[in-house]
Length: 362
Image 1 (tube, rainbow, N blue to C red):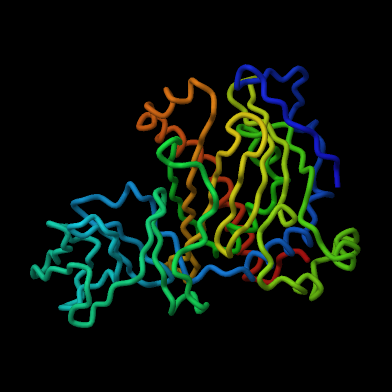
Image 2 (cartoon, rainbow, N blue to C red):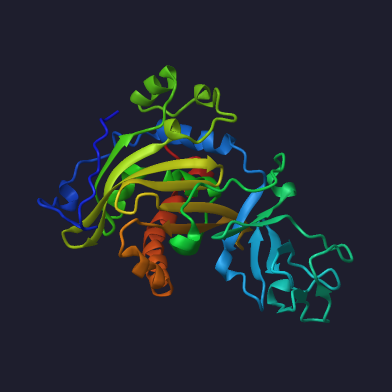
């Protein structure tokens, strides 16, 4: 492990890089990005409880006049608000003649089928059964017990985050031909950041990695894939500071202007990776990456939605201005996330292709 160096926050949020390093002159990270370490972290994440909760989309996308629709693990789902503003979720197929409810409007809190006018008000009706739903203020979730196959939880595992009312929030959604584990594995590989995304990250150093058993560490040193030892004690292990990746990195703003921070990556449940800013500008801010399985495409490939929530906060006096400009900032944040995920979904898709053909290294 490398020693942790404090990230100092200056009077201004930006810093000027004194001696920029060309992309091909930066320090290689492939020796440190050990497949065994990433595989162990992924296995521990997969062993944690999700309670069968799946992210559907952004809270603000649940509008008063139409439902938010998603296909989760091959099941059509619709989410809307009833007359009292409560979140309602259920199958996206009309129980009458199978109309797609995703295309139906919401009137006075009822979802009205556009084929024949059948109105669903959130209660059981003619075989249509509501699903447990949760709105955490940034994202909406649906519980699918027949898909998850775990003991259900009353609420999803929502990471600690700043109060959305006092933060700038934005949600990006992208879709790739891969499985959720490929998205999670991408996020549990922080070493690729400055190499694969030089337009966004520079000066990246991983200063701490998750703890492991002595046997697993020895195998990791040899560059071998984690074996059965990595599974020992995995069940129920909490995603805490001892099971996290700690990264010092600078976010590139323009040219030599950067924002240096310390970020901690954890996986609190099987389909979620959270980046917390713990030092530097925006301390307390989070970026949550959620992977929701959608089903298979017409070529038989799995499809996964990446739902990434940015919840940015700052104690600087000027941040109040940024909050008031949130409607203008959201498209910029989504565009930045979209650029990153165009690359990272290619990474995840490549990983799935290799796994599905038995050619994945290790």
